[in-house]
Image 1 (cartoon, each protein chain N blue to C red):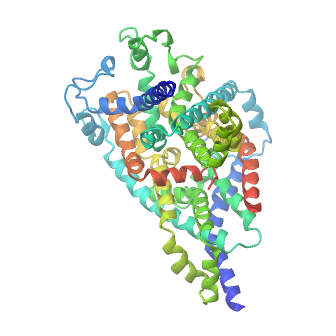
Image 2 (tube, chains in turn green, red):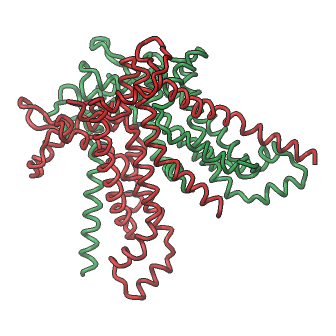
Image 3 (cartoon, one colour):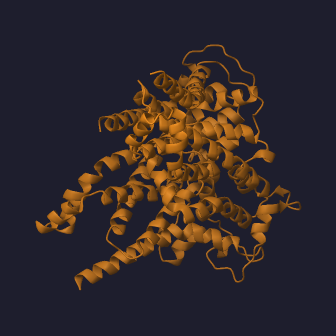
Length: 281
Length: 299
């Protein structure tokens, strides 16, 4: 009997906590589904009386009457940004991880934390030179410029993910290939790379979500609305007094959707990336 | 033998692009920012006249910066301690061999997948205190409905607690992270240890106190470092939720840096804020990096 009561309390607490965590999600979904006539701050907790996608449409397409841009263009920008940046930074991370685990050299143990430091710095400490350098190379304000930035500052975390992963790949495999006469590149191409799918899954999913969710680099590197990523466009939408709050919320949901879908379907890999970030493999 | 030399060279070439990129984008750029912080560039056009620590002196005398440091301290305390406490609670509850374990775990982790900007936009409306014409809305209205009306407050519009409102949104987003860390730690405790404790007649609290907690100590240490450095860098959430707030009540150094550099063209002042931020973050991260990588090297 005593056990049963404590179990009930346990589930009650868990359910209450789960409700608390879902409140913002609830408000997002409920508000975004209401029609303009039904939206009111006073009734924000109520369910919609009927489903409407007006808010989404306005957030996506913008409004010429209201005089604001929708998120569709910047959504596309984010896709164009995230795919190459996540892929290339994962590729570089895999190359670094291979060298740092299977081809250690003098000083490689010191190099590793020097590489990792780059993922912890406050990016404010590099922004002014970054803007100047990008201007110098005429890629400031463009998506390729932003891609380069995300590739570079993604290298530390992808290197960490792959290093932790390749440590679990037996070194005997590499040694045996060496005896068989395989070269450095041959071993990477035919032994390590084919084994790397789980590493790439973790690294690319991590990079996809963090680049999609990034705000600071987008804000500084791409100030013009044409090449802005979606988080910057959402912030402009939400900061504008002419945009109705249900449109802002629908925009927030649209921005959250791609990483949420990834989380729902590939959460396992996302979690591993998350734990890797605290340096525990 | 020649083969080995070629391979050695190839391995160095493999890692060289990343090393060069990071050397420039991290270390050269930091040095460059450090240099700017010692010059007189507080206008649109660069002025590299050397002024020593002048910008830093001005900064520490600056009222806004003093408020920012104060806000950062409060934010860090609320954010880190709440994330640790809630994360531990969630992990303990989930570790009780419950039904629907992955369902609950996924809900608590869900906010981590979302951008700070999304979190900021939504909590901006949740913490909107309403007005006299409108009455209570958002969380305040919810408090009224469930009989907790005495908890109603102005949230981020109240200069006394504004930064705490921002911290609450951040805790909502990040407490799942500490839960995940703690859960991973608890799953690493050998089952024999718990069984032995049970045989010795330890009750639940004793098992927690003498078996589980000691195991979680290094995890807590790591979590404090990671969460602490996130607090120091907090920026996106402040932009999307409140901005500087009334009387800079929700202003933070990272936001001040952005504001003064890219809106005010005070590049040298911005650079000095950035360097102070970097020093604060480094004082947490560098010992941690040295410690964890050295420990791994020994293993």
